[in-house]
Amino acid sequence: MAQAVIEGSVTLDALRGDVRRLRRERVMRGLFFATAALSVGITLAIILSLAGGAADFLSKVQLSTLWSEGWFPRRNLFDIKTIVAGTIIVATIAMFVAAPLGLGAAMYLSEYAKPRARRFLKPVLETLASVPSVVLGFFALRIISPDIVQKLFGSSVPIFNLMSAGLAVGLLVTPLVASVAEDSMHAVPAVLREASYGLGARRRATSVHVVAPAAVSGITAALLLGISRAIGETMIVAIAAGGTGGSLFNLNPLKGGQTMTAAITSLATGSDQVRSAGPAYPSLFFVGLLLFVFTLGLNLISERFVRRVRKRF
Amino acid sequence: MATRDGIERATKAEVQAALTGKRRRVGETVFTLVLLATLIIALAVLVALLLDVARSAVPVLRTRGGEIFRNGYSALPEGAGIKQGIIGSLYLMAFVLVLAIPLGIGAAIYMEEYARDTRLTRFINTNIRNLAGVPAIVYGILGLAVFVELLKSVTGPGSVQGKSLLAGGFTIALMVLPIVIITTQEALRAVPNSIREGGFGVGATRWEVIRSHVLPNAAPGILTGSVLSMARALGETAPLIMVGAVTGFLATSGGFLAALRQRFTALPTLVFAYVKKPQQDYQDLAAAAILVLIVLIFAVNLTAILLRNRYERRW
Image 1: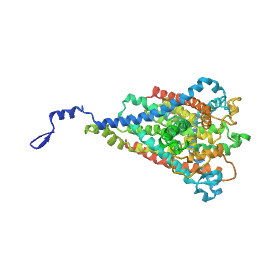
Image 2: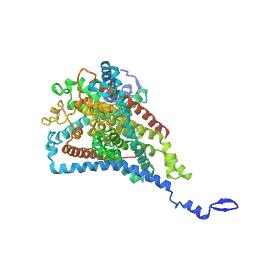
Image 3: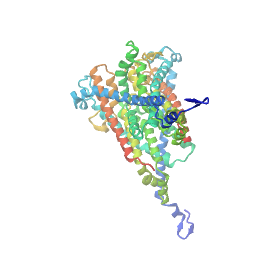
Image 4: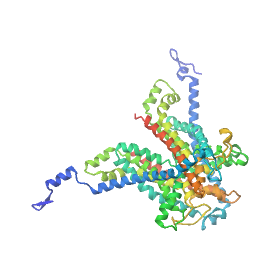
């Protein structure tokens, strides 16, 4: 230990401070770093478990069955386009509901509602965003399918169909889209609006031609997040889309179909539960990997859009 | 328009009307109404659906009373209840409380208070944000691979096959972890630097500053985020189904510790099971279970919102 005297009684040791305090400092920092590093560990674990199972699946499956007439794991038919098409149909219907409703509600809350109304309505919207998806699955089966879809398209439509599931997913995603889009419109500086009013523009012109373009990154991010959530939504499709036991390749939203998420749940549970040496069980990891890659891509793009908003204002 | 000398000029009345803006602009009004309609539809549809659930649920609650809270899963709809579901969900909350919240707060403290802006920090941050966007069911697959299969001997040996409360609790905790981290990061970021500098100025170490200056000021925000993550965990079903939450299997006799390595269930899982049954009685029971679930979730959410409004501070 250096005992160099600097000035009078002040030693380097004294400047270094209490050893116990410094040790505690290092310990705390280490602990916090470990918890932060855990998040990377979780990602690695997700990727490894998905990839491990997927590799197992690909080694067992006959590759020709990946492009066949339908998704029937028990009959060793693993047609990827069936579940991808089902997922895309449900997500598209959902966004036809969620995009206009969510963005319209966001614009009303941010540009038209009085501050007091906004303070009340925003939490209501956020609370509705927490309605569990099983509950919306119940609605899809009990109300949306018999009372809306079958009334509109005729009673020849089966009770389990992609349309009802898509509409319910849309309702589930709407509060999320509205909330994220509202945040970004609300963050547009008032100066821009005032400049527009100063030029004689009315509220509609200001909202549509000034606020919306200024918030376009956030709005895009809201829509992408909505799509990503719609793709990953599981319970509604598992209850209402009619994919239990598998499904033929089908592009008609008024029929039953299978999505990636519903395929995973029915492989892990219920009547389709399969645990044999065959490719059926590991196929759920393969579908999971597909789903993970899809949503990861969407999330990365929307993250980029969100960051652009932060940079600008 | 009045024409004089061949030039179009506005009359005094027209100028006045334009200036005072008394004229109703049809386009403006229609646009406002359309926007209002989208908001009303977005809110009202969900509210209407909830009211419909209440309509089927209230008669069940009225005729069967507290019985459905005392009875468990049953093959006979008249005798079936939701007791195990409620207890199972409370057990899962305990995992969130003990695992996800402390770990999440720790990670957020590192990211906001210790980490410098390096490539590694940015990578971890992006990683956390992406974890928050990973679908719940993928966490279910993670739980299936790691807690149910890999760690079978720890989580639930023998006939439980790893599909135990321990596996479910860990899976749910991992799923809400990124939400806790992100909300805590925001709460920490909202604490102004001058407060930290006050602490450093009197010679405190970083941990001392965090403990005595930063955390107390960020506590309301952290609490709100933690409560929201519990609400999220309450409603999630898909990952639990993946790790084998089964209707009606929950050892309620020996308490929490005895139940850890046994099979488990949760309220939303029970809802899923009842919804899938064709009998009307089960459908009504599902509605009653949904009502209980939603009341629980909204109560938790309301707590979070009230906390936020009560302690919201602008620096």
